[in-house]
Length: 234
Image 1: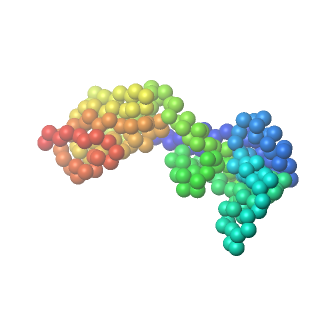
Image 2: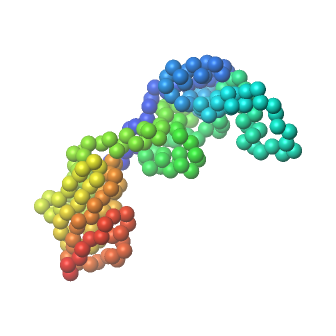
Image 3: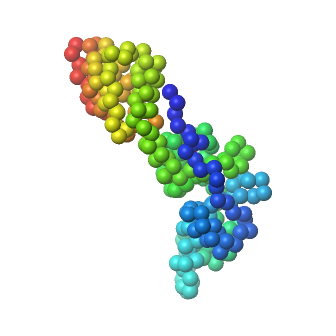
């Protein structure tokens, strides 16, 4: 079963700047390309950092404001003041960058964004060279997969190839990414696997469990991992 990777959704035509790019040039680039951030790269396309609208906004936010006299200003305030006075990408960028590999799964990329609190990830090769960029919006593209493609993956990869279930045993219906599995299989463990593997199919929003089984060979609680409850008729 093929799992979508970052390379499947990333943008390859990336707006970039160099360390010496001036503030005004960065603003012109972001507004002209309709993007919210740009990786900062060196001559070898290695990513040094990322400069975003948030980094640029400090100059607007703190423009003309007097410096607050604090015995120990917090780190964020110090960085904000430094960026407010910066004029080059090297001093404006957030570094080191949070990057991702092109073969990372969309789940891995989403978790990385969440844990590191970023909205986009430069995509780099093994040498740290920029090959693309992936945003939150890009990760959502997987849920634009046609229902017919999702159904084909569930039937061919999950039921037939992995579980060896005949076509006339389980009916698969997909609407808006919601997969409904209906039918009667032999074992409770098969229900558990069918639900779990179907949830892993790219583009699946939810799995509705309407499966029954004849032999209870797995804990009933295992069937409640994010889905409905299957009725046993042992």
